[in-house]
Image 1 (spheres, rainbow, N blue to C red):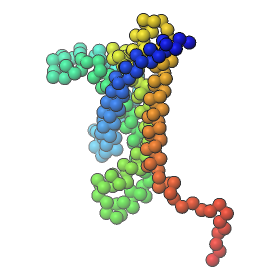
Image 2: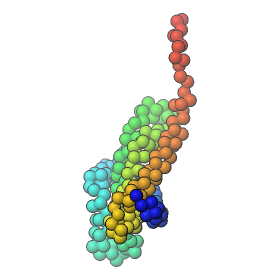
Image 3: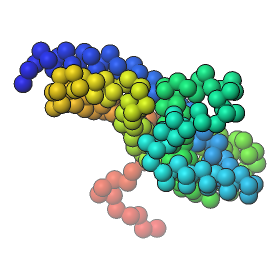
Length: 240
């Protein structure tokens, strides 16, 4: 094993890590906001909005992310009203197209994850909140949102990890993140094993940090379960 080459390769790939982090953070943030809007449309009473949300989720969950990215990067410029609009200076940039594709895709998955979290909320808790006169906004803030997010957190953490790995597809639209730089190094050195081992190590460490952060958040949101009183192991029932 050529350790000097591995060290130099790791330095080169780490220089591309900020691009990977920018892709990841922007796409997850935009996707989260869009997912909340889709969930609101999905569970709302408006039939048109509900059907639109269903169609959106079906399209972006049912088609490959790579095809979605190619359609956005190569396809949008074929429409004149986009090419000659104020949006074109941004949409012709590979980075913007990659973020847009990643955000639109993760929004479809995240919306279904959060909808599952909402369905896990007990109807009794909602009825109890309404019985004491909670308004709709207070009900969402105190009951629905915290409980639904706690139920959705394990699945959402998996989706976030998948988004870290999905940023590698941005290299196919000329965004030079970690995987793109790794492929360029391989074309120059023909040392596939060493370069991809370094890239895999970077993704493993990054995903480990993310999973630890989600685990800490899950423990924080579940503190009430750890502090609940537990019966003594040898306690005998009292007979009146």
